[in-house]
Each structure stands twice: as C-alpha cells, then as structure tokens.
Length: 77
View 1 (cartoon, rainbow, N blue to C red):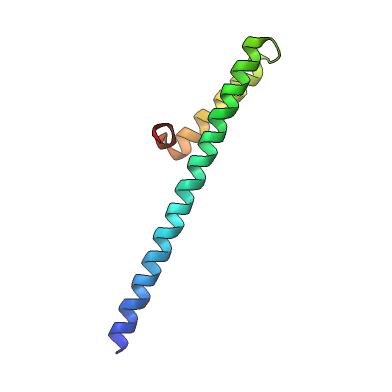
View 2: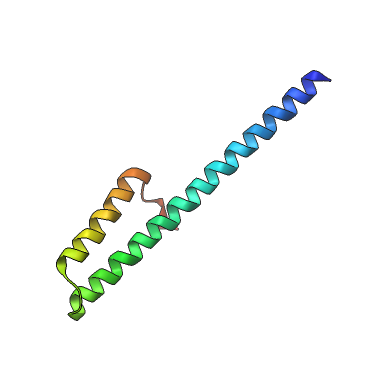
C-alpha cells in the first residue's frame, strides 16, 4: 500500500510541475506579445509624427531582451 501511495504522490508532483511550466510558458508568451504590440505602436507613432525614434528603439530593445531570455516561440503562435 505504501508503494502505491508513493507512486500516486510522485505522479501528483509531476503533474503539478508540468502545470507550473505551462503557466510560465503562457505568461512568457503574453509578455512577448505585449512587447511586440508596444513595438508596433511605437513604430506607428514614430512614422505618423507623434512618436520618437528613441521610443521605437526602447521598445525594440525590450523585445530583443525578452527573446534572448525566453526565446521567440510567441512569434509563431
């Protein structure tokens, strides 16, 4: 009986860890999408006359940093 409980506990811990990983992935995707949206808004503002090149560069730098840290999978989803 103890072996069964140990296996059940291990499976539950594995499932919990997989759930945490999935939550992290979703959060990273959302953050990447938000940064991409900010870059697009900064670029549009710059080219429509209400933004600055510095704001566009800052948005691009933030996006590139996110990609370096978390990858670019959010670009393909």
